[in-house]
Amino acid sequence: MVSMKHLRLMGNITAAMLLVFAVACGPSLTLTDVDYAQPIESVASPDQDGVVQDVRMGVSFNVTPLNVMERGEGASLPEEVRFIRSRDGYYFVTAPGYNNVYVFETEERALDLYEIIRVSGAGLANPAFNQRSPYIQLVDGDVEYRLTKDGLAN
Amino acid sequence: MEKLTIKTVLATLLVLAVGFSGQVQAQFQSDFQIKQNFDRDHAEILDAVKTVQTTGEVDQLMEDLNEMERRYRDNATLLNRVLYPETVQSRMTNLRELAQATGARIARLSEKGDTVVVLEERIAELTSDATRYQQRADSLNNALAAMRRSRDANAAQARRLRQELDKRDAFIIQMVDSIFVAYENVDLQSLSPAERRGLVLEIDAQNVLGHIESVVDNNISFLNTHTELSTEDFLKLYAVQVEFNRMWENMGHDLAEIYVSETRRGERLNSIVEKVDEWEMLIDDAAWTTLADGFAQNNIELSPFRNSLEFYTSLNTYLDEAIARAEDNGSDEEVERYQRFADFWFSDVKPRWQQHLIDANLMTYENFNTIDEKLTEWKLQAQPASYTWLILFGLALLLAIVFFALWLLARSRK
Image (tube, rainbow over all chains, first blue to last red; front, side, top):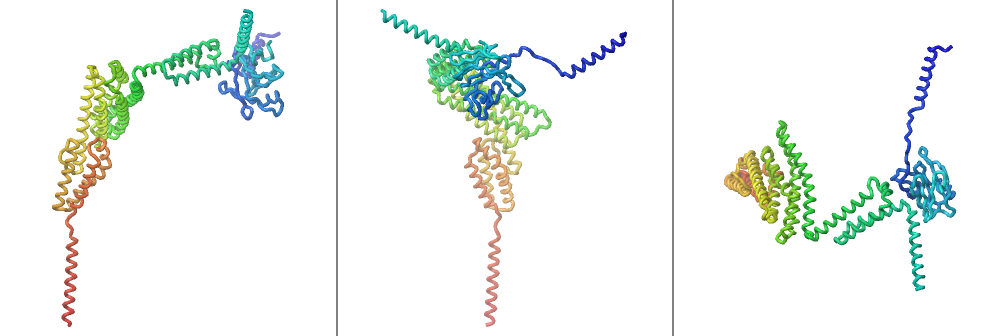
């Protein structure tokens, strides 16, 4: 037979456990409806180390591993690299001569490859990204591709 | 008729083909390229604004601006985001205002001629600097007023603040000088009544007379309240006044000519003239009084003087009398009198006052040379009569007696 005294004791113990759990997890807050969309693509030339940067957007990264993946070891770096950040926060990267668009998600001081989207067999001639939320538009001459982080949308 | 139809069909197809390809290109234009194009067009128009020469070119520029605005209207949202915190509208407005200002300047040049427009611009430019100096002068005057109330007030502080005010006065004088140097290039007689009126309004708008009057007012106020300064300080102020007078005499005629038929402004000019006279009287009085005191304190009794000619005459008279006196009777007392004057002259007057006296046109280098020469003469004459020749004569006589005695002795032995 459980008395009221026991019930009160169990209630106090449960409350104390919840308090300890909450304190152990640290502060928790989530801001929603974030729009990371970069209004206009960045066009940057890699430096001798392969680093591209957009001072205005405050971002820089090394494209050498990307170039190795696209063209193989020892291949020269492209003249220019074009990249844009989507509304969801993914970076879309490509360059003239590339067959693919590389989609990256952001990590702490890193970009992790999320998806490779094949858009050309002979290499893009004059690619350019446009922000067309919820898509990223890739134009190359008179050809248009609508991209999401998971691939071609059309 | 058949040929014409084929030609028409071909032409139509060509137009359609061109139109279609244009549409395709426009459909897939890069946003980045749009931004690049906008920046390039903006830079081109900005360059054109800088080099435009005629009102016709300005009109063409305004038309180009309208066309540019139409061209980018559909991309305004994109451009506003990438131009942030500017907008397409703000960029276009800036260009329009620049073009309009340039157009207005070209129009003024064609109406008034280069010189008058440049003159007006010079007045505006210098006046903005003068206003800055005026604000500084106001704060210095407040500091001076506070210092006068303070028991710790001393001449050194007043002198330091005065130096600051001097800089500002020198600037105003330079400014007004500069304006009227420019006026010298304008044939005032040849100006139309409207042009003349325009210049008058410009001078009024930029408060040129106000700045000039403030220099005079500040100096009068300073001289009325600071009698503790040294002779050197007053001589410096004298030089400022002389420089101001030179400038004022140069411009007074021009101003009178510009303001001819302007009763109210004529009265304002007369008021400034009266103040300039008061300033001159005050500095004259202060400078000569302290200068006379300086000599008196060193026990040099010059005859009274109230102007530069009397001062120079007084100095010469004093030295001429001293030289005449020394010629008659050089003595230790005369040497001491000379030394007193020379010490004061070479330790105080020349190192500390000479340049200011010359700057203020009170004396010349030749005047100083004359005084220096007279001092040398006085020094020579002031020496007491020399006894050396008597001693030499005595020695020679003694030797002659000794030789004579020896000769007599030798002769007696024979």
